[in-house]
Length: 249
Image (cartoon, rainbow, N blue to C red):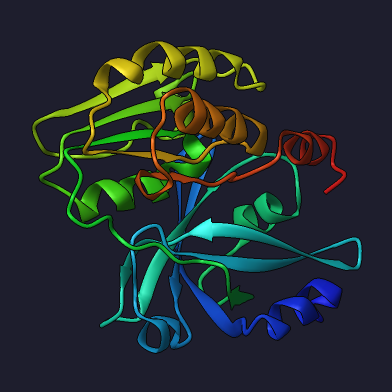
């Protein structure tokens, strides 16, 4: 499968292509499906960093589509990792539902990159949801001694795969019901985050693009957090998810 103009652009940006092979499949919850992969040599070539993600290529109606996914439990020595798919109608979810051991998929490594703040922060203040949970887990695991509060947008842990994981003291998850527009999440963060903020705190935001922009502006402009203590990245677009639900990805 060719990657179209987007694939050409990624190659010009020095994206590296790999082929992953499915090793296992598991339905974690009604809305979450996990696939295990052999990495095709990627981890040995690139190394691993917290919140690392790749672009997977899917075909839909004869056209290539790419979607970004965070690596779960990457193991460079074994050359393996997993990816969690939040299920909805669309090419990516359809492929994940039917993938079996031995199936392959093309991938591009380009655009990922994250370095731990130094010195380590006094507290992590994280905002995310089911789609960014693997990245949240990776971030928490990379700084196990740092107290953390996570505002997590999700209506039902039994449906969406549960809260971000951490077995350490000083950890709190604030569950916020999701309505699809991020409004309740913005309200909860605006109410709760300022009281936990100090000069050494680090704020990490990864929700839908519009909500991420709103919260990043609040943290940066209203609360005065400097850019080196804020990381904000839109993990999906609401209109994209709506198109997927309508079968128009």
